[in-house]
Image (tube, rainbow, N blue to C red; front, top):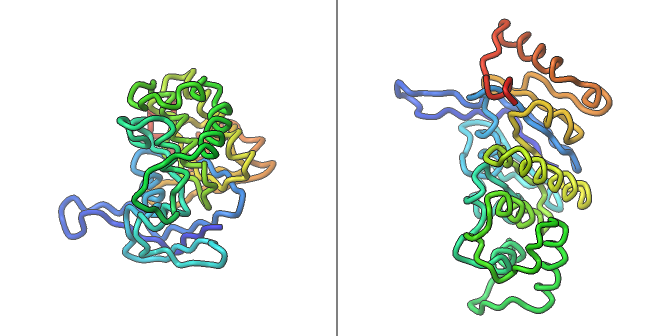
Length: 267
């Protein structure tokens, strides 16, 4: 579905703040994969997602996606990739337009990648589709479709953002710690919705998380990153049988015995 080949990304090149974020990164994402990505701060997780989304362009390497044939998207701008790639950010306020209603936000998502005219009109058919989709969230938002999104809670907005990102089935769905800013109960609800939506529509998904238990519980494949590269890639039965202690040990083996990320330990 999507492949990263020999990706290099360095920030602030030639300055005292030069930082190599990705070093010869290679990753092949198969159709239908749900990959959870873990690693310490500065491991390159978010940079990798930004490279896939088109926010950053690598200095070296190639990115290809299967869009009715293999397409090289290495230098394709972010707005063009948006027709193929859905994304949910860590901040619940980022993925929606606060001054627009729930149905208007969904209409924007429903027309992603399509030609648009000057006329703004939400059809009766679209409203019915939106109502049925909102019922899946079990948040009673289907009865509040004209409510401004800015009036919703953080959890409701993140659930709505998830629905918007997957409304027109993307080639790849990117989840960048999309539950990190939520309280535990709400985070659990959004994760359950994530699992339900991606499983139902067989959406190829990449999810960054600092919670090792969630990384093991969700998805069919787990990737651990360190120093801009992948140090562990596990799937199938081996992933199902993993424990948090296994991941701690794997990290320690690759970091000279020092586990330097308190966020992951606390998670």
